[in-house]
Length: 176
Image 1 (spheres, rainbow, N blue to C red):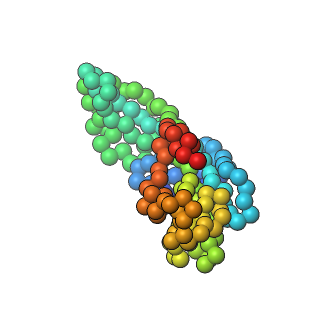
Image 2 (cartoon, rainbow, N blue to C red; image 1 turned 90 degrees about the vertical axis):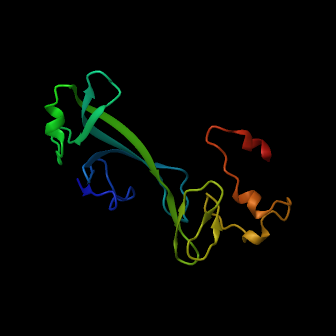
Image 3 (spheres, rainbow, N blue to C red; image 1 turned 60 degrees about the vertical axis):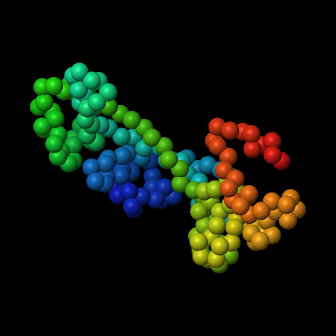
């Protein structure tokens, strides 16, 4: 088991059971899943990470939607109590006990550009190298230079660059 800070955390080297302990935040790595297709050009595939977190919660006696919560270890130990004891001893607050929450995030696949720079494959349309400005598709294919984009269709670069389909909107599929 390894303890990371948020800055040190790398989903490609982390394992289930590792922890992120940073500035009062405590998170347990409970699941790591490789996603997407395997591509020999990719250094790492996309990963979805699930974190488990425990919080000791206190609720306002009159307004149940307000209160306080303190990140804690699974056993209820609070690493940085700050005002924990003041809140715990407040007669106007109800002790909600230790609650467990999960949250997910993803880390993009990475590949090496022809110039040697690492490119993060996190955009469905274009993934641009920060060093040489070459563009790659989400699958890792090198795209034509931007000045050639839209020659066959009459689109301008701004038409293509502004394309950003909503997650809940499939209308973009009808464009082709």
